[in-house]
Structures are given as C-alpha cells and as structure tokens.
Image (cartoon, rainbow, N blue to C red; front, side, top):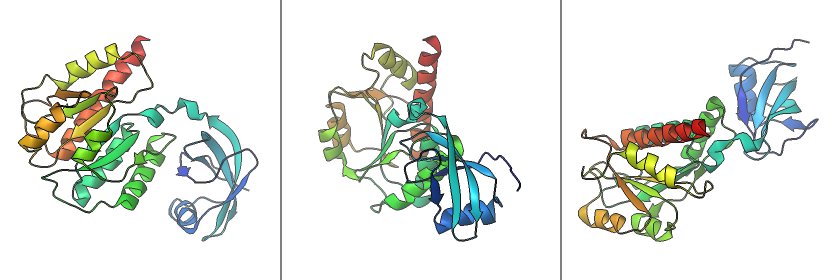
Length: 257
C-alpha cells in the first residue's frame, strides 16, 4: 500500500478525534481522488473550525464516496488567531470583485465578513453560499483553522446601531481629511486594553458613502476615521489594503511581546 504525504487540507463539518472514520461527500471525494489523484494510504489534513487540525489517511478510494481515518492532532484550535480576527464590513460588490475580497480577506485573517447595504451599493444580491464556498477554499489553502463568519446583509443604519461603542471601527474615509491608516492603527492597538476585542474595518461602495452616511458614520463613538492615501482606490482594493495594514500592525505588536 502506497503512502504519500501531501499538503492538501480539507474543511469538514464533522467533529474530529483520533481513530474516527469519516465518509467524504461526493464533491470532496472527487477533489481528492480524481483531481488530486490521491489513493489509499495517502495523507491529508482535516480541520473543522473547532477541533484544530488533524492528519488523516485515505482508507477507501472509491470515486464517489471516499473514506478517511483520522490520526493525530497536529495543531490545536487555540493556535488559530484568525478565529478572533477583525470584522470586515463592506458594501456588496459584483461577483468578480466580491469573490476576490472574500478570498483575500480570508487569507489575511478576517474573522467576520459583514455585507453593508448603502445608498450607492451597486448590487442588491448577496450570495452568502458563494461567499462561504470561496472562504472555505481560501482557508484550506492558507493554513488557517477556521472559516470567517459570513453575516446576513445589513443596512448601514442597522450595522452602526448594532456596533458596540467599545469596539474600534476603522472607517476608511475617501474624503481624504482623516489621518493615515498606519499611524491610527498603530496608536489604536498600542492603547488597546482588551486583546479579546476584534476591531472592525468599514469600506464604502464604488462612488463612496454619500454625505448623510458619512455624517452618520462619524457620529458613532467607536468610529476611527482613517485615510488610505491620495490615490482613488476601488472598493476591493481599499478593503484588502486596510486588512493588510491591520495584519502588519498586529504582527509588529506580536513581535515586540
């Protein structure tokens, strides 16, 4: 029996424990056995967002219904910093840009994605099933142990009404009169007293927030206006830039501990 170790990771819904046998669904079986051409004895990693990451070995390689045996735990769930990552609140986008935001935000450690409907939102349809599928594939590739929480869409008014005053919300204000995002995030994280509070990032639609929305956002006690620079960025670029800066600042802070 061959035994080939691979770097393939697979998200599953089931609980994970040593010695457990899991029957994979048709999509997962097709991916592992037909696309990746794994066979009996080959190994892969499994995670479910609760029990950490586990090594598993293929025990049955039928094309439509494969079976794996769970071995040992290789990483505990506590090591997954993305499970309490930042909240990315953004206006829904068209399919291509939306897919990119979900994929890259997952890779950058977003803990939650909140679609926010604004006056200038250019699409009313939000495919949460597609968002979740995209996030799952990205999580499998980037080694995180959890999927981001994909929320139901909210109006901007309801989103702000529900946002706690104690949870910083970095408002990426395209008007250009806010301090640079890097300095504000560095200052904000250095002043943070509760490391369990996940900050949020608020990104507007193409065309930006209207003046009434900007006034409503800036009136919220948790909002920290920030500037992304002098260039005009597309909404998907702004979201990923802001997440990248926050990720870098967190890494700086962790390196100093």
